[in-house]
Image (tube, rainbow, N blue to C red; front, side):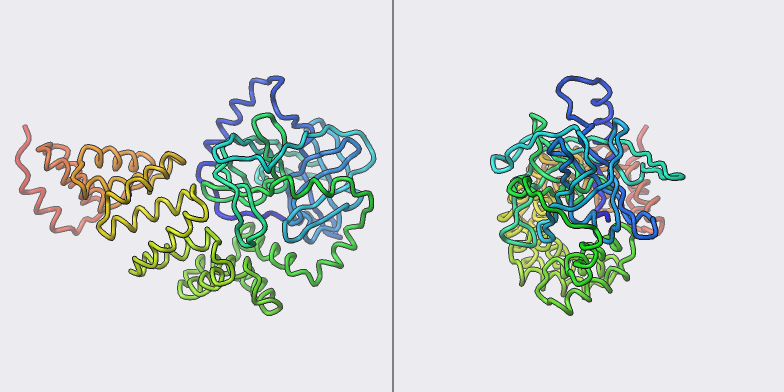
Length: 451
C-alpha cells in the first residue's frame, strides 16, 4: 500500500543530483544494505503494494509504515546485497501514528543507527532512502528494485491532523514507494520514517515514536492483522488514500472515506482527503465543505488551512483567505505554499510592501517555486521597482510559468524603458497566447519603428 499526497515537482532533479553524489562511494555513506524493498502480496500471491523499510537490530527487527501492510497476506524484504527475507511476524503496529515493527526470518542483517529526533531543528540536513515504485520490476518470481537517495533540510516539526502527533516536515523528496524508508541526519542516523510525499514538503514520523517498542519479543501474524483490520477505520483510510493517490481513482476513494465518516464523523483525515478527492473531480463546493469540517475538528491543520484559503482567494473572499494563510504560517512558519499564497493575497489587497518578505522567504526555502517568483514580480511591479520585477518575471518564465498578465506587465516595463524591440516581442507573445486581443494589435501598431 503506497501513501502519497501530491507529486513533488523537485523530486526528479533532486534524484539526479542524488545519483551523481552516490556515484562516488565514501566511508560516510548510509549503509544501504540495511534498507529493504518491501513487496506486499495478498492471499492469491498478487502484489497489493510496495514500500521501503530499514533494519534496526541485527537479528532482523525492521521498521516501516503501518500503511505498507494494509491488505497484505504476506510481505517479503529484498536488500541491495542480494539478501531476501520473509517477514515472519509483526512485533508492533500503531495505526494512528502509522508505524510497524516487523520480525524478519532468522539471520544476521546490516543495520542503521538510530538518532534523536527530539533534537531536530529547522534547516537541519536530512536525507531519505527508498525504492521508487515505478522502478520496481517483478518477473517470474524475481524482483528488481534500485535504491534511491534524496537530500534536503528540515522545515520544522509540527502536528497535522492530530494535535499530539507531530511530523518532521522536510524538503527532502519522498518518491512513491519511499513509504517506510529512513530519513537520516548528517551523521546518517535515522531521525524519521518517510511517510507522506508532498509538493515541496514531505512528512516523516519522528523516530522517538518507535524507540520504546523496539524490544518487543511477541509477534502476531498477517492473518491476525487482516482480521483486526476488517473493522479498522485507519485501514479504510489508507485504502482510500491508495485509491486516491496511488491509483488516481477519486470516486473509489470517496466511497471509502464516506464509510469511515459514517462510523466516525470526527475522523479528521477522512474529511481532509475527501476534500482532496472532491477537488480532483472539480466539485468545489463539496471540497470547501470538507476543508471547513477538517478545520472545525483540527483548527491548526496547516495544509487544510492553506487549501481552504486558496478556495476563498479564488472565490473573492480575500480577507478570509488572508486570515487562513496567516494562521497556517503561525502554525508552520516555513510553509512554502502558504507564504507564497499570503504574498499573493496581500498583493490583491494593495499591500505589496507587506507581501515581499513572505515571498522572499518562500523563495529562500525553495528557489524553484515559480509561482512565488511571479507573485514577487507583481509586488515589485506595483511598487514601480521595474528592474526587480523584470528579473522576477523572467525567472518565473524560465521555470515554465507563463501568464498573460505577466506578459502584459513585461510589455509595460519594456515600454517604460523605451526598449521597444523587447516591448514588441512581448506583444507578439501576447498575440500567440491570445490571438483575438484587439488591445495587443492596437499597441503593436502604435509602437515606434525600431531600426
